[in-house]
Length: 113
Image (cartoon, rainbow, N blue to C red):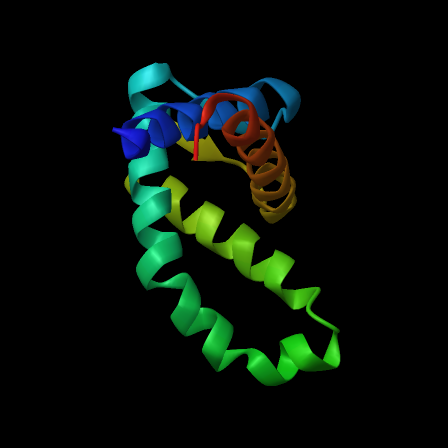
């Protein structure tokens, strides 16, 4: 049951990013929910591969390149979810950061783990 709460909180975090960043557009809660599901899938299966392939760059930049990878995965999700649009890489980059921070705060408040 906690995965459902986490999924809903991540959807809310995406809607907050939509509100704060003008280059992100989400057409309703259903699109945010689909984006949260696919973002969870991408972060579970594709992001570790990208992190492993770019390990030398991440090591050289002291881990800051992982923020770029987060922006790439955020933009990748927007290609596949109807109603979830990102206009630029900067929007994807900032959206990934804002979504992660808001999701973390909401999960601290509402999850009982």
